[in-house]
Image (cartoon, each protein chain N blue to C red):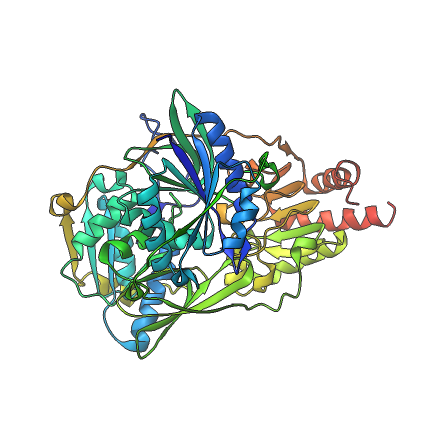
Amino acid sequence: MKQVPQKDAPLKLNETGAWIREDVSYEVNEPDAYALEEALRQREKHKGEVVVITSGPARAQQVLREALAKGADRAIHLEDDKFVGLDALNTAKAFAAAIKDEQFDLIFTGLQSDDYGYAQTGVILAELLGWPHATIIMHIEKTGAGIRVKRELEAGFFQFVDMPLPAVLTIQSGINKLRYATLIGIKQAKNKPLKKVAFAEVQSAIGGNLQKIERLYIPQKTKKTEHIDGPPAEIARKLVDKLRNELRVL
Amino acid sequence: MPDTILVIVEQREGKLNRVSWETITAGQAIAAATGWTLEAAVVAAPPIAAEIAAKKVARVYSVESPRLEPYTPDAFAAALKQFLTAKQPRLVLMPHTYQVRDFVPKLATAMERTVISDCIGFRHEGGKLVFVRQMFQGKFAADVSFAGDAPWFATFQNGAFRADKAEAGASAAPVETVNVEIAGNLIRNQPQEVFKEAKQAVDLTQAEIIVAVGRGIKEQKNIEIARQLADALGGDLAASRPICDSGWLPMDRQIGSSGQTVAPKLYLALGISGAIQHIVGMKGSRSIIAVNKDSEAPIFEIADFAVVGNLFDIVPPLIEEVKKAKAGG
């Protein structure tokens, strides 16, 4: 799971111009919330253990606490500021190193992050682990030989795929409805295991980033946007005027 | 060995996925800027190679193996790793489709390389190539460069380049067949037939006017005012993904990367923030009017007319004014 700036947080560039100032509010990456929800539902159907993992500074622990409160069994936090600057390949390498002694049957990720939007980490992790994977998954069924998943394709198309376990799946939103953490869940979360993994423990698995953000900037607007102001009645009249005389749709 | 740019096009059931023309346009633009040679490759669809060869590319490769049909990430990654390791292009370009997302990170990782995904453009300055992409749901743009060895992988967002600007070649490019070996036990996924789920009750790609709702509509029952506005305008109702995920409107009303891509005369976005996955489905609209109470909403970057305000205050009088105008007022 990943912690990202809140959707409506006002973001500002930092002094380097290559990242944002981190003094904003954070939340769980929404696609990852669907991944967690799906894991909890699979456990409800088939028993087992749901483990949540994240990498990031101390603040990222909040994402794990919320996941534990929703019902995850234990958490792993790769905790260090340095994890923020890693590219997707190195992030996946760090995760692979941190979980090398675990025996997961399924690894879920959200289909992409709301900050970078690369949609890579899950697929990279599968390749590093040598596991099969499928992406943008809308349904998972257990079968005799493994699982049958429903892949979402573009334009309303879908496809079922049979896969062996263990496997990595990236989960699409709308696969389920997200639950809220209950008060009891929040209380119980405090006693659930939360293991910290230091950067030094996974450092040997990580290399230099293979790509670099040279700079971030406010996108240059190519569109000329006209603001329509005034009280609602006036806005309505101005819009209809535009619709009729400029856009010619009335 | 001259530096080459290789565009890998996408096919579905033997037909070229038309977004591939956009990637060819991108490849031609980068070739013009860098002086590198542009080549193209098609995987598992030999007839398409001739279609690609009509464009201005130096060469087309037809990568073939019986094990490439049907598509699986294992087969595609193995085949392309073999081909690219031999060819060693400088830059590999693909459209940012669901299928490419499914295999290109695996392919790159297997080759110990990296992918810059979902780019909206590029720049070539001082001999350095940087790729431009959106970050934080479009709030910022990022210039991203490669820090490692070639081959470099980049995928382009739908609509970042124009398919109709792909230049034709003076004569057909040579087509070379490349047979790849894929071990049988390599393929672990067993895909079934692709199918369409929603009875496509409405084809929004044909709509001239679309009124779309996003999270700002707050509750299912509020969609009624958007429906009334759509009716008054003689348009169709549509939605961003979260609305369809919640079941408030059927999936065939969805606009975006996983729904329909539309380019109507008028797109009226109500309470839609403008997440990238939605924008890719409607940025080609002739005119865009956006209503959102957040002045920072990314939708305003692409809107022709911006109304920063509460849609519940604005839509009802708008419906009345539209009705008046249509009645000859």
